[in-house]
Amino acid sequence: MSSSGSTQKLSSELLGPKVRMLFEAMTKSELIDTLSVRGALTKARAEQVVNCVFETMAVAMRQTDGIEIRGFGTFKARARRRRGGRNPRTGEKVEIPAKMLPRFKAGKELREIVNASRAFAITGGDDGPASDDFDDEDD
Amino acid sequence: MASGQAGAGTIDCLAMTKAEIAAAVQDAVKGLSRKRANELVDLVFETMKGTLGSGEKIKVSGFGNFILRDKRSRTGRNPQTGEPMEISERRVLTFHASAKLKEDLNRS
Image (tube, rainbow over all chains, first blue to last red; front, side, top):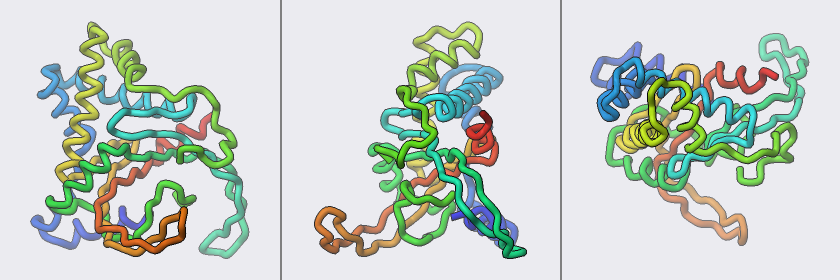
């Protein structure tokens, strides 16, 4: 799961611009630009809106039972138990404390929209082990 | 996901909804009516949907990345009956929380 970041970085460094396009992503600033145009408001205000949306969702995950956006999905924090682990370098036993992990589950409508986009290019995330990873324990 | 696991540590109050995000937006941005705040919040999520629906992933710094993955078809099992069945090829959306969001959640 965690390998995708480095794989993508490697790919965009080693491969040409055409291939790099495949890894393109919308960034927060592009989301702000789009909101500014579509919502007819200044960029500065669009930025305030977008930042506020994500900050509020983070607060919701921290302080309430999470947040549900109809048609989009659900964000919630899940507790992870304290567990034992090992320092991979030294093999030494370490204890990983209990913590909260953010989880997102796409709503039905978004799942369908995403699946329908298979006609378009893949923009990252290779065909990893086939698993529906909403319920697994990894991070 | 629906029932969560043991729920240790999750505070049991109701989940927030989009209306509450809109309220927060209205507070944060001067001179927005509630109606306008609602529209803008809708527009944020509609834009994200459109982007993901065109096969493009989204990176929100300080929050996390919405990543698309193509899955091969595979044989799964009906968990109720144990019967093997074919799970078709599909594209799925996964969310990877940023380090900052993970930290924020664990600040007490």
